[in-house]
Image 1: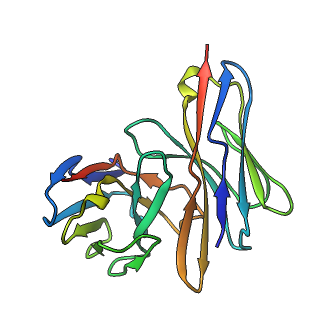
Image 2 (image 1 turned 135 degrees about the vertical axis):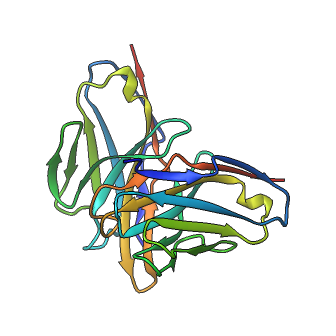
Length: 112
Length: 114
């Protein structure tokens, strides 16, 4: 069963690029990797998803190496409003049924 | 387009009481999920549904039951609440298989069991 590991917290300053890496041991071939953002007292919000190589959208990039055992969320030029908890998610469908594996989350604090 | 809504937002129960949490989505999504989130932890999947009339167990299903009688609604039931079920519960939906596509989460239900 895939397991995810993320740094507990990170600090940054406004305008900097932030990279958050998630390790997902034993990820299965049919797994996608998804990242969510969560503010206090709110539900998680989808940021980006990928299967391999690089994916970019209007808010972030996701880098996935060839072995897919990790992924890196890249947030360009963060602002104070990017202070939140970021989760990576891996899903797998196996003989035991469908499982989703959320990481424990990385608390990002952006300072002025 | 309200997305995913949850009812109620807050609830306090006594041990042994029962309740039902309601989740509704207006995006015509096939897949719906119930998660629980405990302090300092990520989300853990309780049950999920791949379509109307279907349900399946997730990682932590014990003590909970679910029903998906209508495509837009997914109900989570606690038959006999226990203090260990004190948590924040989130409902989510996706158009297809969970890990392929954008997931939408509700605002959460904060449940306290005394």
